[in-house]
Length: 223
Image 1 (cartoon, one colour):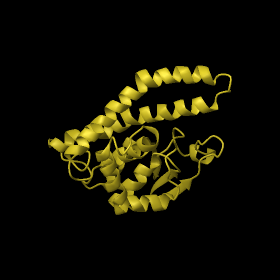
Image 2: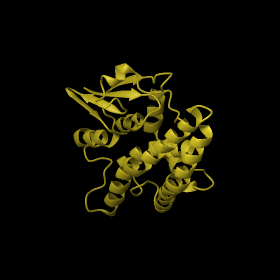
Image 3: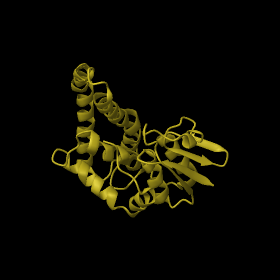
Image 4: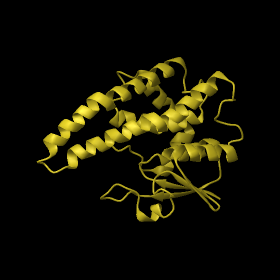
């Protein structure tokens, strides 16, 4: 039996949404973050090969990493759904956004989270130095790259409803979490990125996504 080991407020929401879209028979186990560290509890780390979310088990298999899990599920349970056919124009867009989500956008959003935490949690006498250093890193590295990616998101979503054309694909599912986080952590305002927010409205209106949120019960991207 396929089992999703689901960590609250994590990228695991993608896998929950995917399974609901496909209508796959699966087990669902919820894990709360440690209240002090905000990391996965020890019980979860015993299951995950890396101690990170998401992770699935399927028989003797334990697999982590969002894109690897999505590929595995689509290969085994997808029946040709949620991936454009090779050779089509949609396939190229699909491949780009499917991998840009984890290879480019998610790392930048994670860095933003880490920078914010460091600014707040360092000893008070170090805060002016840390904030100055990280402020320069944000100005010269983080913000320009994040802005370029979000501008490309807005441009592509101006041409189609979803990231790979007018039909939902796994690229939208893997980008969905990034888009939710970009609102609270990446400066993706509705005024500046209206097409991106229209995507979020379409995503949030899908019955499968609503079911995923209901099963999660606690999803609220960490600012």
